[in-house]
Length: 295
Image 1: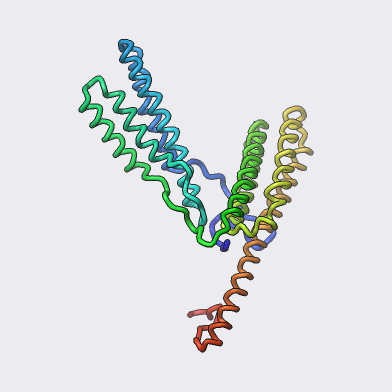
Image 2: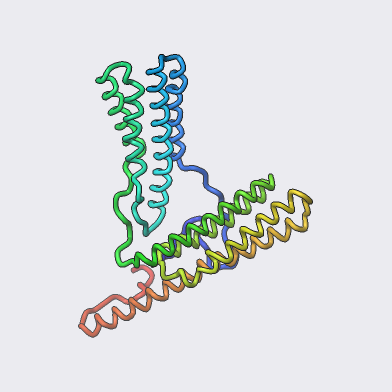
């Protein structure tokens, strides 16, 4: 079941949602940029070699760039896994594949120095890569008792919702207005809070499906139309109407999230009450629920 949590971006019972900030790449994701830099010397060095050296160094460059890209995607997947209470392990172990490709790329680049140098450099690179980024998640998390068919449905609908949010962001960037882009980012964070709530309890999908589909699609279309209109007219009235629409959407998404969390708490109270009655009939003494202050 989804549980209420008290982070900065959690919805509040009131109509006014908190003003979240857009988060940038994590430190681990930023570190993957160094992997692309490691590949660059091989590309520069390739053009000062004979044909065999040219081919070897360009191949090393290509393998290392692929390793860096896979590692970055693996880091993002692992962070998404860690951020959720229920999640499946990534289908493709990108970070581990990146480790292997890093070893292969460095080995290719050092092959001119002999077989032993290539092996040692490759193993060293693999060890450092594994130390810096770690392995991929290897187990599903919190999936006990979860209907996998329903979870897959949620995954597909959330993926569609994420696509709508990306299109909204792209349209907002076309306006060239940082405040509009930041306002869209704020709405996206509120929408993603609802995504996470439904992912943690797929039974909430029916109650939230309009928000994840129809409402987000309408928000995307409105953003695209506003971006086109703003580029032509810079109409302040259109901007005010669009921002009011985002305010209404954000408030309604926050209310829906809060309502789902409240419903889940009510379900939990009912289940606990039924269990307590059963234990009382069995003669088992229990402390009162909810516990009194100080207990």
